[in-house]
Length: 97
Ligand code: SF4
Image (cartoon, rainbow, N blue to C red; front, top):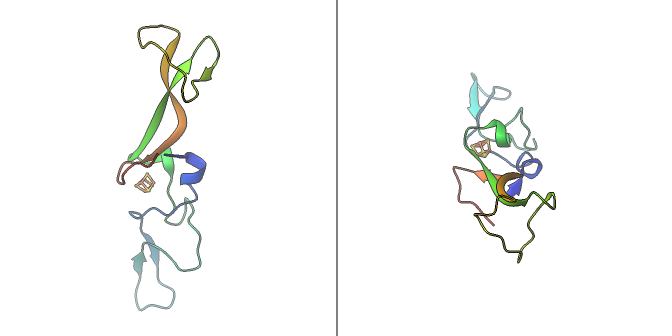
């Protein structure tokens, strides 16, 4: 699981970009050597992609913050709910914790 900002700095293995310099005819590549990942050139676009899976975390409404590891709660207590936490993962790869 990573933040959207972290994802946007990584390469998307599924994107293609047209490129013709140095080749006969136009073709497309998944990566261009020396070009860092970006939204314009084979980089992950995080939640702008249909494959992005947004992570949720338990939110404590009374304390106005997400629970920290080790804190317990009751799923029946209306003071707690699941909310997106700004992190996620690509649905095409296995999620990492
Ligand atoms: S979420 Fe996955 S498929 Fe979508 S842009 Fe990112 S790496 Fe590519």
